[in-house]
Image (cartoon, rainbow, N blue to C red; front, side, top):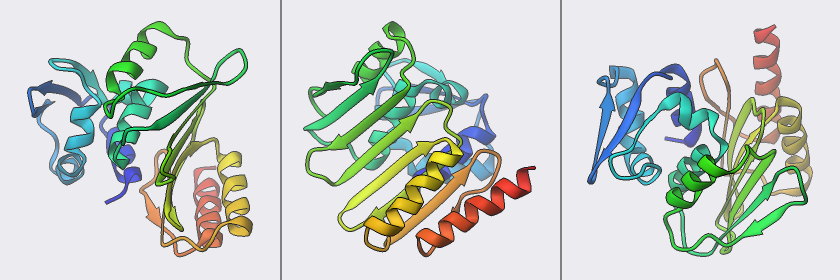
Amino acid sequence: MRVPDLLHTLHRHPTLAFRREGEALRVIPAAPPEARPVLAHFKPALLHALGGGERVEASRLLSSPFRLLALLAHALGVERGAVLTLWGEEEPRRYLPPGENLAPHLAWADRNLPPPRRLHLAATSGGWSVDLVAGWEVAVEALAGRTRYLLLLPGLEARGWLEAAGKGLVPPEELSVWRRGEAPSTARGWEEALARLGEVAHAAR
């Protein structure tokens, strides 16, 4: 199961609310049957993305760049030593978030900072990288070489990234793409993923 499956589920059920009660995750109202396998798979990530006793709707997790980044990072497996780069109105700023739980720091940023234009979070080990751009339309998750890439980008930027990946990265071992309103799909290579995005864009017109 891939992160685009989680994004698709949250998008389809925006009024579901998640509440952390100790190490238990309460879903309000009860999750519909089709959502339960995905939510169960990503329960640890959802728990880590919430503060104790906090209640957050799915729509809020998707609409807040900071809250969404915390969820995505924990879905990939946050480790000590991640580097966060934030693009706001000024020059990019780089941070070294302390510890392995990003949620408290990103929840503070959600309450106190204006929404950023772009967020990039990467493990210093090189094991994974998340890129989130305001106005994103497409999610791409790819495992290429020893790095897992997760990108939430506007459609044209997603196509540009896939084209560049086809020229500069090794063939992906895993590749999944998702556009809002469509079911996630897997692709066997960069060109097939580009074609899938084209098919989805054509169908949406």
